Image (cartoon, rainbow, N blue to C red; front, top):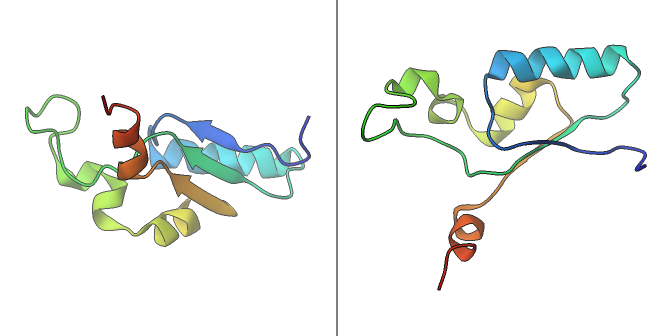
Length: 91
C-alpha cells in the first residue's frame, strides 16, 4: 500500500464531514492528507433546484480551491477539471 494514499470523493458531500474525517485520520497517525475529488468544483445551483437549490450550500461558490483546502485542513486538494470531465464524454 502507498505510504500516503489519497482520499478520493466523487464530490465533496459536506465540508464539515470532510473536515471531521481529516481530523480523525490525523488522530489515527496520518502525517499528510491528500484529497482528490472526481468531479469539477460545483459553483452554481442546480438549474432544476433538485440537488442544491441555494448557492450558499456550495463551498466552491464562496471559496477558492486554496481556501477550501485550508478550511478542510488537508495538505493538498484537487478537483477533476472541466476539460477532463468533458474529455470523458466526447464522441
